[in-house]
Length: 280
Image (cartoon, rainbow, N blue to C red; front, side):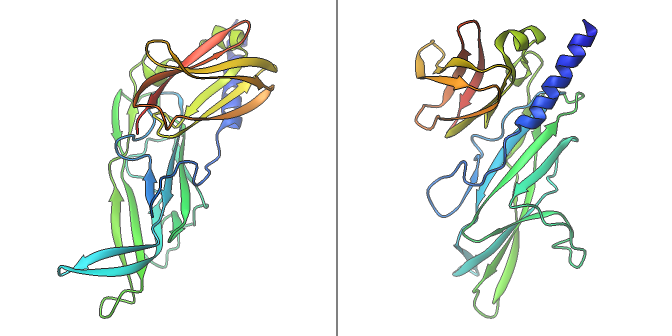
């Protein structure tokens, strides 16, 4: 029995590694000249101590901007945003990857002597936080700080022609759920075998627009997929033939009101569900 449990643990860990979603700029976006998503209200997906974590931040640098000097508005072109990959407060075991890829540290300047993401003006990018959360983390909020430097061109004399200014994103947090709640309700070994699903993840969660459902299926089967509200009404319902191996299903949630919903995945022999939070 111990050998079986160990084998299932190794299989699930391997499947999670293979099932990690890529960081694709523009997966979440808004209209307008620039954005950083999720916003402060939606914030980052919750995590569970001792379990794998994955979240994405989507950014678009503006094409131009206006800043004020001595009460005088000054227009400037955004040359680039530089995002420091050393996220302050990030738990041990969680790494940062980006698209475009991080530039390595350059010791020639204090403004480049760290791994960094460079986003040209009017361009999009994606930051991915992923890894294994330490088992010792207590329930509660982990506050993060992301340092950014904006490089501006076309600035009039005597300030210009180029200036740079620091800024921070300090509203993000990773909430660690208490045992037995939220993300800390894993599938049991019995559920994994019974449901033919060796890995199921929802990202982002809370979700603002597009929910990415990632799952690994042991055997090809037909499934009914539905999104239901708290009183059991099916808001979204469709049938899917899921092939053996990794499956990725995008679901549009942007039209749903804020609240708690459940993803239900069922076949002729079994079913499972997972909580979703919609937060615009």
